[in-house]
Image 1 (tube, rainbow, N blue to C red):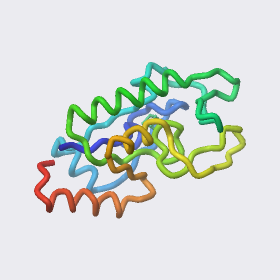
Image 2 (cartoon, rainbow, N blue to C red):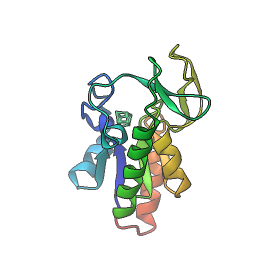
Image 3 (tube, protein in one colour):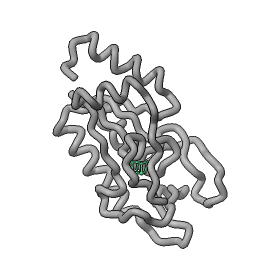
Image 4 (cartoon, rainbow, N blue to C red):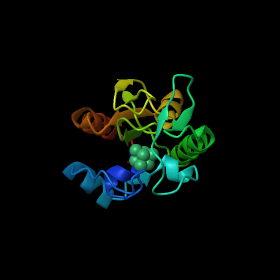
Length: 158
Ligand code: SF4
């Protein structure tokens, strides 16, 4: 079993603005050193460039840029590629970047590009959950670490 982590949280400059959102977490660094972490960016996997226009999930479920371009297909491709990777590596737990239209797991932007957050999840987080993978965000680090440690104590071979 491996752990899936949003690539931008691992310092990869794959965000829409060409930046990373590096997470300084000792435990994560240790697991990474042990080769247990799979870093992945669903949007890049879906074929989107870096940088790229910001996009938000709309009330009808589609993903659009502020200019109105429908990028839903690329987001779906990315979510499906992420799920395939998880199946391949027996991923049962993921740490994904909150608020992203792909990786957000509890809150995303409202689709109007006015900075307002609403309860909701990104396409990738939703698809992983539908397939039984526990998804945490960087705002739930104690819960994430505790969950992984429980898996380890139950004998899962990370
Ligand atoms: Fe990070 Fe996920 Fe956005 Fe890629 S899609 S930049 S991994 S939040």
